[in-house]
Image 1 (cartoon, rainbow, N blue to C red):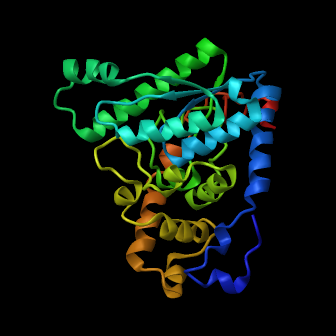
Image 2: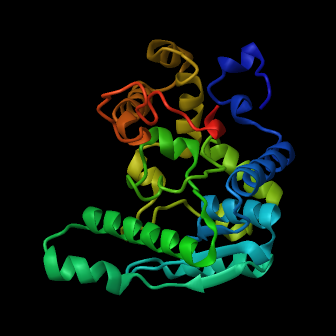
Length: 286
C-alpha cells in the first residue's frame, strides 16, 4: 500500500488511500498461499467455491498461480433461484485458467431440510442454509481431494459482517481478507479476470435480485472511502466535517460496530492457563 498525501486524506473523492500495487499484492498473496498451505500444512491442492463473482474469481486466479491449475479444484454450487449468469461467468474463469471444475447442484440438499422441516423459512434463512450447505460440500471435497478450502471474503464484507457465519468465513486460509473490495477490483484487473465479472454488480446471489450495494445502502466506493479512514482512527465528526454525508458515516460505523461477534472465534470459558487460543498457541502462530 502507498503512503497517502496528507492533503488527499481530506479529499472525500480521493481513492489514494485505497490504491495498491496490484503486481506486488499478487506476488505476495501467491507466496502467502504457498507458505501457509504447502510449507506449513503440507497441502498442495486448493478447493474453491467459484460463484461467478469477482472475489471467488480473483481467489481462483491466485490459486492457479500458487498451486497450478491442475491442483486447483473449483466447485459451482447453484440453488434453484441462483442466477444462470453466475454459472456462465464462473465458466469463463474455468475456461481461461484450465482449473478442475465440477458443478454440484444444492437444491435437493437445501430443500431436503427446508421443505421437510422448515416450510415457513423465509428467503434470508434459506440463503444462510445455502451458504452453509456449500461450505459442507467444500470441506467434504477437501477430504476427498486432499486439498485445503480457500476463503474468498474481502475486508469490506468482513468489516460489515456481510457473510454467513460459519460458512463464508469457515475456510482456514483467506488471501483476500485484508483487501477492501475496491482493492480486489484492482487486483482482478491486473490478474486478467474477465470483464463480464468485473463490470457486473456484485451480489451474494442468495436472494433473487440481490446486490451487495442494495443490502448495504451505500456504494462500494463510498463505503471503502469511509472504512479506510474510520478504522484508521478518524472520528465520525471529522469525516462529516470533511464532507461525507452523516447518514453514510453512521451507516458504516453501525455495521462495523454491530458485527464484531462475527469476526471472533468461539468464546471459550477459561479454566486453565493452557486454554487454546487464549494462552496456548501452536508454533505456526508465533
